[in-house]
Length: 223
Picture 1 (cartoon, rainbow, N blue to C red):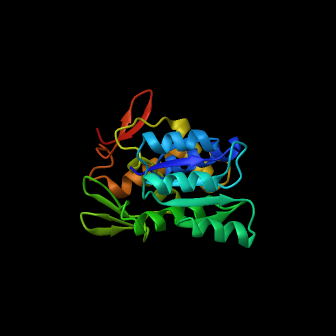
Picture 2: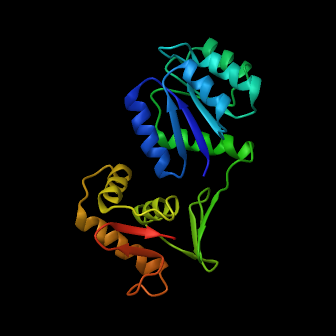
């Protein structure tokens, strides 16, 4: 699991990005200022830094400079200012990419994966038992044979694979479907999609071994 440090002082952005990126398989640490960011970088190892240029305490340029002095961790700048000076300054300091606010989470995710691929710090594949997902191509195979999932079935599978060994409550899974679909969903919707996914990936859907039911708690993939 790739570990990201998010340096951002807007709490709503921090909360939304943390939840979204966690659902996509990333571990997220966050701080809201320059000093705390530098302290984190000095004492922890990260695969990527997401750094807002404008901070209440200091600025993202100083964070990038400090990071470059002690590590080769990739840096993506988040900035509300699309002016040429900010972009050029950030790239000249060694930033790997930038994205202007407001941005779509999926666009940021694409940028993150691209930067991590260039740094050889991520894999485009998720696997468990006989199921393999090529996340770059959106391809799912079972025993090497492609299986076709709907968008929501695919989303559910990613959530399970990115949280192997963790019991996911029905409320958590409903939230993941809601965030992806952008429409109201309920407990019955989740039941339908879990059943559909099991029908396609389980060897015996009537006795599921891949997506296990944890009675009274939710579902789990893996030990």
